[in-house]
Every structure is written in structure tokens, then in C-alpha cells.
Length: 598
Image (cartoon, rainbow, N blue to C red):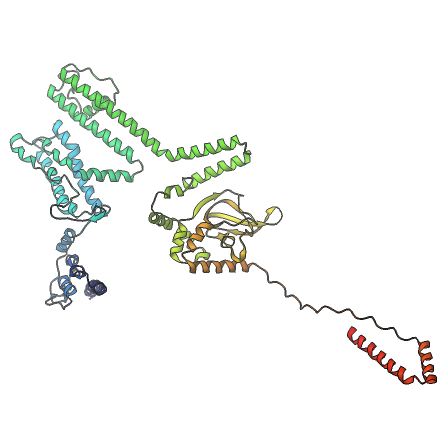
């Protein structure tokens, strides 16, 4: 039951996928009614070869939906007629059909493994055809083993030409092409006719001569494939040059044994005497000749002299090429180290000419050494300037996105804005004790800690550590974003040990934020919160009292003697009423002045 349900689920998923494709095609046709019918029809050719598995143990009357009926349903839109079958296709036939209807990229693992097998067949012909022709290793006793191996290699060639090469994707006029038919058909194997020329038919007249298989060496795809594999290694040029030299020595050893057999083994002092392993002895002669070691017997006949002269000329040519290749290989391997030493020497020479203090010179040397040891280069941007923006973005995302995405300041921002920002980051190494920024400086950069630690310091002689920031932390964003009109550094930051920081320039950030206004608002909001987070609340100010008006001076009281004289005068002269009124007004005015004063 479990096997039946698994098969049914698999087929239902394929059916749903084809329904979705048909729906998308229908939508496109409704949007663009002028599109041709050929573009709107879903071709189900790719589904006809999909294997449908029939698990063992299922009954013969089990319901199974074939892909042909599904394809007819998807293309016509009508229900499938006769689509229910009691037998599922065989697994082996479906796999073969899938192989013959698929395409390959040159980087696919299946194609690489197949080309490795074809490469083995090609190397069989390259290395053993000269040996079988020159040395007596092919005898009537073992001739059948040689022929069987040859024909197996030919079968591999035929499968490669008939099955794999026509399905290999290649570039034609900027487009990726799989197969073309007609007179304009382009194949990735331009030497196909010459590779399989059946010169073995001459075996019936000349006998089994391995030289008739020389056309098998013209399969140039194997040569390109081997070059591709060599380029994957760091010492690819050394491997390629060494292979060329070994093959030249191999061919020279075969020619020397053929020449010795032509003259007669052991007939002269110069030829091979037939003692010991023939291939090893002849190979030893080839090494001494081509590398011009010396110590060879002198040729006696004209044939021997001509053969030896040709050997010497080829040896000088091969040896000079070998020396030149090795020089280029060593130069290429040490090019980066030479560039580093040149930069460091020029900097030291410059500082010495201007009498820079030794302490500063030592710090510059330390920076050069640490940067080179940690990164293997002095400036990472030099490697990426020649790449297109898309490739630089892909590299920057793989290298730096995991660090930048964890920064709290950028969480919630537009993802594409972060991608654009990654391309503008610069990596800088700071030595222990270096000031990253100082309080009061104009902020032009923002810093993201990639590796190491920095400390926020202050107090007398900068000995008080307020905070320690580690990898993934951000600082300098307040002055960079100019929140609240603050565009100067608010603290001193020094490197605690070696610190590798990402630097984002203010100009680059502003150019990026122009296209992302929502992210700009979010960054300013977060920076404003960070700025206000550390501030202490200001104490409430008391209500200001109104300014006090200076009180008028109080009128001094009337002396008692004068008061008694005035009373006597009032009684005698009848001025009591008038003086009483004056006295009453005087008392009122004094009382009012006292109230105002209070």
C-alpha cells in the first residue's frame, strides 16, 4: 500500500506541474493575443521519456496514468481518452530514453565522467600506438587482446560522437545552442569524419599495423578536456609542460628502437644491443639525447649521424622550451609575492628619504606583514575592479553578506539596498592601538567590524574603556547619517589588537539611499534612537517668578510733639475739619503703599 501511494503521489505531482505550465501559457496567450499558436502550445516531449516506476508487488489491475495521456490532455485541454493502462514502462527503457533526449553542459558531472572515460581511450591510442609499432610487444600470441581493446576504444568513440557530442550545449553567436539541423548545423566535434576513418581494412593486405590507427589521435575534444582539468590545478602549466616533455621522450625512445632494429640490434656501437628491458634502455638513450647530457657513443654510418643530428636539434629546442616554461611558471607562482615585496620596499624607501621616525616605519612594516599574511593581498578591490557588477555582487554577497545582515542597524532595510552597499565596502586592517576615529572629527565613514575588537575610550590619557565592540558591531553611523545635525565624532575609538574593518564612505551611502527612501527613513530613525538612548533626561526647570517692582519708600511717621501742636492749633483756630481730612488721606496713602510693598 505504501509503494502504491508513493507512485500515485509522484504521478499526481507531475500532473499538477503540467497543469500549472498549461495555465501559464494560457495567461500569456490572453495577455498577448498576437502570439503564434506554436508559442502557446505546451510541448510535452520532455515528459514522454520520464520514467514511470511500477513497484513490484502491485496487482496487474492497478490504476496507472501514463505520461502520453497527460501530454495529450495538457496540449489539447480535453480529457484523455484511453489513458488508463495496466502496465507501466520498463525502468531500463525509460532510463535509456531519458539519456537520448537530454542535453549536457560541459560542467555536468555525468559529462565529465564520460569524457574521463573517453580520455582513457584516447590515451591508450596516443601512448601505445608508437610502442606497438616500434617494440616487439605485439605478438601473435596476444594480438587478440590488443584488438579487443582497440575495438572497445572505438566503441567508446562511436558512443561519444553519436550520443554525447550532439547533446552538448555550446555557444554560437552568443546563444547557447544544443542542436542544429540542415546545412547550418554546427557540431562540437569538427574532426568527426577523420577520427573514425576505417583504415583497419588494410589489415587484410599489410597485416596488423598499429600505425593505421593514427587517425584516432585527431579527437581534439580530449585534448581540450585534459587542458581544462589541468587548469583546475594550481601547477597546471608545470603538469602540461612535463607531459609534453615525457611524450617527446617516449616518441624518441620508440624511434631509437625502430632505428636500431632497422640497422640491426647490436650491429654497431651506437644502436641498442638488445640486452635488458628494451623500452627502459631506449628511454634512457632518449633522455640523454634530448636533454643533452652527453656521454653517448659516436654514430658511425650516415643514417646514425642524421638521426643523431635530428635528435640534438629537437633536444635543444625541447630543452629551451622547458627552461622557458619553468621560468614562466616560477615567475607566475611568485608574482604576488614579488608585488608585495616591491610595494613594501618602495614604501620603506620613501619613508627613509623623508626621515620618518623609526616607530612609524616599524608600524608600517607590521601592517604590510599582517595584511599579507591574513589576506594574501594588499587590496581586495584590485581583484574585483575588472569583473562586471553582477559578478562582483555575487562575490560580495557570498563573502560579506553573512556579516552585514546580522548588523541590527540594517535589519529591516531593503535587501537590494544591502546588496548595493556590499559592493561599496572597503576592507582595512588596523594595528593594535591605532585610532579608528577621534572625538570631534568630521564623520565621513561608517565602520563595520569584520574581525577583531575595538574599544571606545575616554578620560584622562584615554585610559578609561567605556565599551568594547566585537565582530558584527557598527559605529560611526550617527555622524555619517548626520542625525540631529550631528556630523562630528562623539567618541574616541581605538583598535584592541589587530582589527579588520569594513568602511562605508558617506558619499557612497548617500548615492545608494537616494534610490531607497524607505530604508533611508528607517536608518535615520534607528540612528536617532541610538543617539537619544545614552542621553540623561534634563531636570525640570522651576517656574520663573515675575520681576519684583521696587517698593516705594515708606513715609516716616509724624513726630509726637508736632502732632500735639497741630491738635492744639485745630482746637483754637477751627481748622479741625480741614486737617482731619488731610490726615485721613495721609493715612490711606500710607496703608496702600504698605500693601503694595508686601
